[in-house]
Length: 179
Image 1: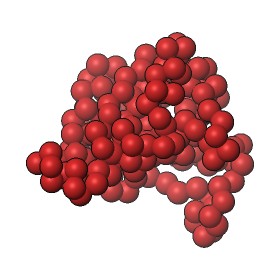
Image 2 (image 1 turned 180 degrees about the vertical axis):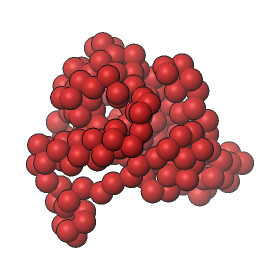
Image 3 (image 1 turned 90 degrees about the vertical axis):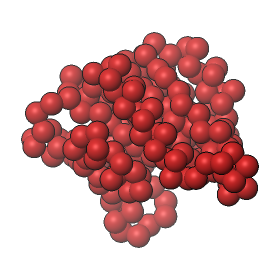
Image 4 (image 1 turned 45 degrees about the horizontal axis):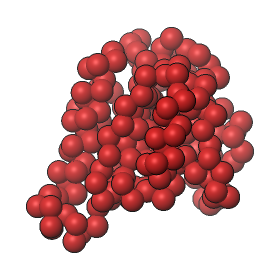
């Protein structure tokens, strides 16, 4: 997420944070309530400083927890969500779709076509059942971190920088449509 911070700041103020388990050097994430609580604390701190609508942008688990926060707090201040590499499939193979099915806020999924944590056919099946406005931007050849293999970049004549810039442009378009 930090690699996108500078790019995202071109679209508006950005507030990044780390979860407690990360700050403590642990590899295993806390349980869902603690993660949502940390996300809510960061959101509340931001809401004190920023009076306009807030878009929650998260990478992988951060996007998933942002969806939980949007569902739980129901704040009118949360205008939309952007998930960079949404982790639809858990480590045990289960599809974590209920949070998306409950969602009411607009959401943009930015997914790599090679993302094993979010196979696009499984995301298709979930999207057909979602109530919330949703859009998707696929990074051809991208993995869960939206990184494209060097050979594929060379073949396509793109750079990773160009790929990352295309994400920001698509995010800008999404926000223009929902804000």
